[in-house]
Length: 209
Image 1 (cartoon, rainbow, N blue to C red):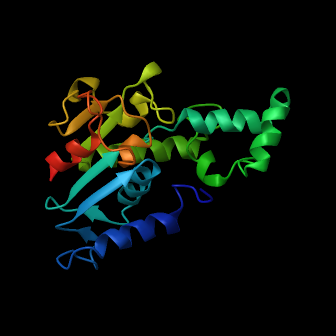
Image 2 (spheres, rainbow, N blue to C red; image 1 turned 60 degrees about the vertical axis):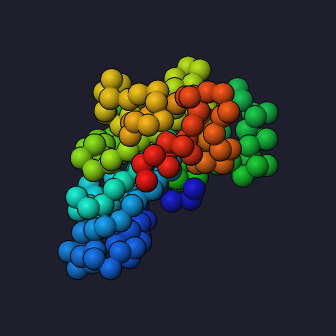
Image 3 (cartoon, rainbow, N blue to C red; image 1 turned 90 degrees about the vertical axis):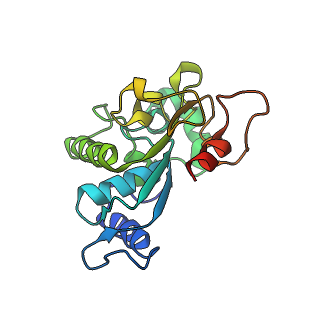
C-alpha cells in the first residue's frame, strides 16, 4: 500500500471505475447507477472518501457491500509504526525491514488510529467525512467480532463505521452481519465454516444477491 486512501487521484480512479460498470450511470454528473459496489478493507475508505469529496455519488439503484472496513483506522498501522520507530524493537524492525514493511509505506500510515498518536488533524477530519459518507450510502456490512473484538487487523468498533452495535446480527441472513471471521475470511478466501453460524461469509454474500 504505497498510496494513502485520502489521495485525490486514487479516489478519482475508484469513482471512475465504479461509473464505468453500468451504461445507465451518469458519468458527466458522477452518479453511479444500477451497480453493485463491493469493497474489502481499505477499499471502503477509498470509496467513502471519493463520495465525501464529491468525486462521485451513489444513486438509490446502486448497492454498496462492505467487508472489514477500517473506518477509523486499524491497530495494525499503529503497531507497525511503533516497531519501525521504537529503538526497543530493533530486532523486530530488522525483520520487518527485510520483509519490506519498514519504513512504513504511506498507505499503511493513512490507516493510523483516528485521534491516535500517529494520526493528524487532516487525517482525523478525513475519517469523519468518510464515516458520514459510509453511513449514508452503504447497504450491507460484514464485521468481525473475534477475540478482543477484532479480526487480527481491524477492530469491531472501526468496522462499524459509526453504526450502533445493535444494528448488527450474528445471522448470515441479515445485511449487517457480525462474525467470528478473520480479515482474510471476509475476503471469501476460506469459504464458510461447517459448524459455526457466525462464520458464514459466503452464504451471507449469497443472501444479499
